[in-house]
Length: 190
Image (cartoon, rainbow, N blue to C red):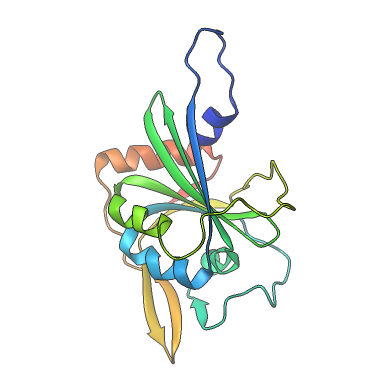
């Protein structure tokens, strides 16, 4: 079982051990998030495309080179989830917008820099409970899953979030990414 399935499943046997699940919520601005993304290395990135036009919610002075990265500009909260499954530990962050909707998800892979991940979760921003209007139970319905290495460049005084050339994953990283994408019901593109 993987993260989302393990978090929602109940054991068939009442004597079976419960799934160990941990969540941390941190207020996060898109600018701070985007500055940390390149240091993470290879991630599995899942996103939900919005058909709504977003105007005032976008971060100033930040651009994205790929439309798939636009949901990151709506991030106001990071919800980091850790779960121990039969397949080993899984950890991911949901990027949640100001209305409490998950817009993107970043999954750690064996090839991810775990120290950079910890730095992201301890970066500026308060460790808070989400707002009281947080709609519980909203799930991310990803359009696709992509293995990505983020890159930030400066363009005319603006931060531009782009992707680096694909870096080959380890065989274990490939298997883990494929399992997570399958569990998330998303098509994995490389």
